[in-house]
Length: 220
Ligand SMILES: Nc1ncnc2c1ncn2[C@@H]1O[C@H](COP(=O)(O)OP(=O)(O)OP(=O)(O)O)[C@@H](O)[C@H]1O
Ligand SMILES: O=C(O)c1ccc[n+]([C@@H]2O[C@H](COP(=O)([O-])O)[C@@H](O)[C@H]2O)c1
Image 1 (cartoon, protein in one colour):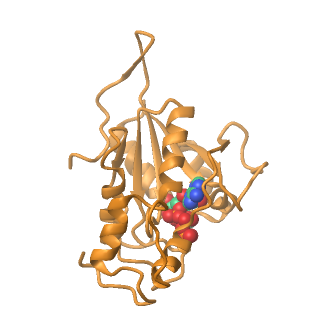
Image 2 (spheres, rainbow, N blue to C red; image 1 turned 30 degrees about the horizontal axis):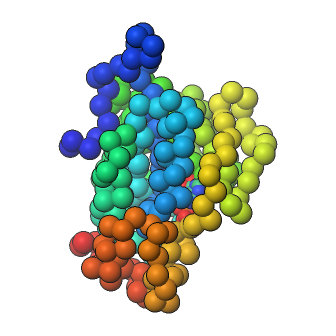
């Protein structure tokens, strides 16, 4: 799978090699929008990441059952949205895993694939980070990756109450976009141009996603 992360090369910094730094941007991406892309790009810049791997969830167990678009559509939209950025990749790791999606499983798998020397940064929004204590195996999560919480309009954390040195909060250029709002706008016949990449507008128009409350079958 050409889009999956690799463990092989080490990035050079001032002529010296340093451990590879990989960002993991987890999300339901229903649909992916410019808020997600700006967050990935800004964290890559701030933390000198070599690449950012977008990981669409398979079965997000904390989202309302039956309301989430089939994973294959969300995966394809994520590929379309990230295709032009050489630093961005997309992983099927959660889409292909059966059962509810837990970040702990993803980080363990990523560690196995990439090896112990790669530094992992899990990128998430302040809203998701605020709820992290409810995630599966929360203590082990912090052993496997550094967590980066992005403040977004309407969701701001100043103190996480989480272990020192394991979490960073960052400001990203504010984009008050949410997937919920994009879905609502499509359903009401309002434009989503410039809230999401052009290819995503075309994909949604072509497939008829979000036109009503019906969740489509998994066939793109
Ligand atoms: N505009 C934004 N700026 C920064 N981070 C964001 C933004 N929108 C979403 N995120 C973060 O990206 C991650 C994945 O988000 P998700 O796919 O759930 O999108 P969402 O817009 O929050 O979706 P929904 O409205 O359906 O809950 C989450 O951690 C979320 O907080
Ligand atoms: O591991 C968990 O228990 C867990 C619970 C809720 C959310 N997450 C992850 O948090 C990320 C953002 O989730 P969401 O629902 O806001 O799109 C995504 O990668 C989810 O898999 C993970």
